[in-house]
Image 1 (cartoon, rainbow, N blue to C red):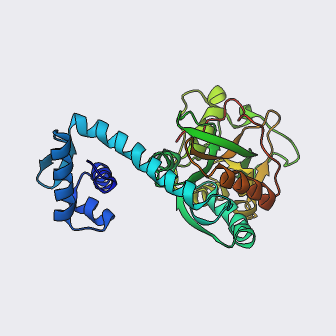
Image 2 (image 1 turned 180 degrees about the vertical axis):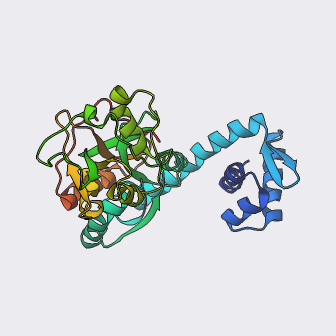
Image 3 (image 1 turned 90 degrees about the vertical axis):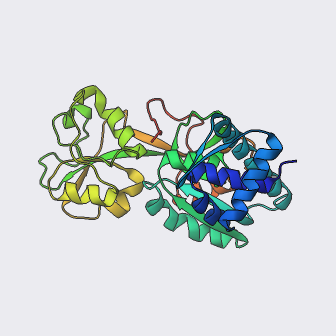
Length: 311
């Protein structure tokens, strides 16, 4: 009979493609992990791994087995959560993933509120791009995500939190008055500064500007909104700035913000969690706390069309 330990070791090997790194993740010796993988293959009667010098490559059966192993392991973790959290809201460990264009702006308000209202909760944070967060959520490495909606993952449920409209950040020397609303045509020929590929905010900006810019190349690319805003402040171009980031990123007097005419571009922020997760009461309580801590109203049940979140 195969064991959860074997599945955990094999899942780590599938992720790393290397026995040594997989053993390090599992906090065991490499020979011990290798022996468990051998026993797993013997029990199944198939080769899951092709062993090469310095790497481990999954066979075709191994790749499919890895996917199913992750699902079993996630289910086992959900079972433990179900037993541990019955009748107690937001206690114990909660592994929260947040996208980089949200984390610096919402966490300073959310974390103190969580600590005050739920002192028995221990938050473990993971900040990275949407694609990686979804992968980690699906395999049970994270419990819940805070990101931009909608998502089109069949095994993930979402809970909208609030709408986050975009403003146009320009240099303070821009002649357009801050009181006048603009539309997408106003930035048709502006150098548009975006985050590097992989950030969902980049995709959202491109989706809004595509109608007027066509295939025009977008200039520059940065790894953080702070860097983007410094480029704007120094006159390199303009960018779309989420409202949630204004208090932090638009304090520089060299920057001016322009509002868009309706319909404003923007995104809907929400929570995402596995459909089979047993802690939905926790996620609902978390959603309520987030909207209260940020002083925002709940978002519509469905994310507005055209606001894509994929990274």
